[in-house]
Length: 123
Image 1: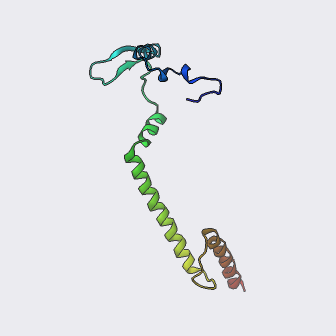
Image 2: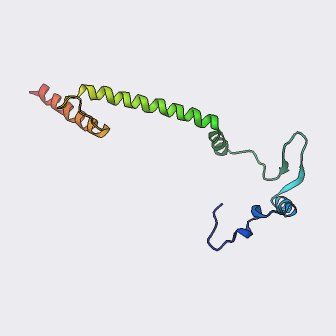
Image 3: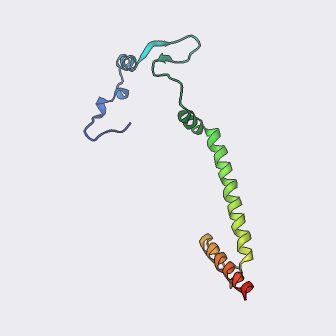
């Protein structure tokens, strides 16, 4: 929820400390009961509609297990990417041979080297 500059914090219902006014706010938002229904942990609200596919995806991605698995996959992907650059770097001639090159420098040097090899084959 974004606050406009002219909106005072006192206007926000979630800042109220009075439980009665909070309960009234829930009822006005569409809650039919302040007691959980049978087999439910929380009050049943009219706004409890089935979640959209996007909302389900968003909630799933918010879990610690998902974030950890995603971080692991990303780390593996980046390591494979760096290994590929290291292998390409070994194939390129430079002076000195152990000169540290950035990824963009490796790509540019590879383009030049391929052009040179094509020129050598054409002659």
